[in-house]
Image (cartoon, rainbow, N blue to C red; front, side, top):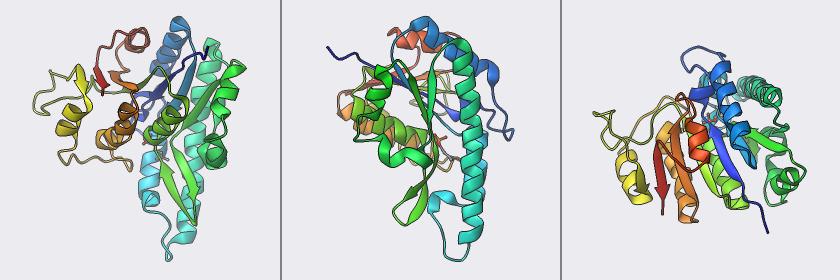
Length: 253
Ligand code: IP8
């Protein structure tokens, strides 16, 4: 019997303060990690970059790849961005270790090409480790680009066929009407979500915020994987979602 895994993304806007450069939200991250311990189970974790990655990636236009004129400067910026998201990853890993989770870090910059198609996640999980990867700068063909945590969630989901995927964000779920932030979609379908989110929303992140997330979620839901979007600032919200009580938006085919 194969043991099912839950894949979880800690959004950058939850584990960092988006408006304050390099500010790690230690307490919230610890609460989320504690929820994992309380729930128990097999998890693969992904986290976003928040204020450790997006301002730098934007400054050096890394989402658009290298330009011939600014290549040297961009490569320096890419190195800084990569190190900064690794610093954030270090903080997340230490928080996980502190609560007793045997977390191991998988940097997409170093490992992207060996992360997928090689059964690596499953092999790491079998030992009892919790693999943790994160939105990062990566080499792609003859260029560099940014892979968001959302994109990695999709890649992992399609490889592992998890029990479900949980996106821990700084909002309660998906709002059908952005003028009314009191009502969210609860149990919903991809079709419904696409209608409300892809209405040309704009976002300061280089990876496009909720609209970018929905693009990745689409393939997951189409594969029959349930996707939950919850608010990580609410105590026990992650624990409840792992246990099947989603106080947010649950998307199914
Ligand atoms: O925060 C972005 O990942 P995200 C990664 O998951 C970088 O969108 C380096 C900006």
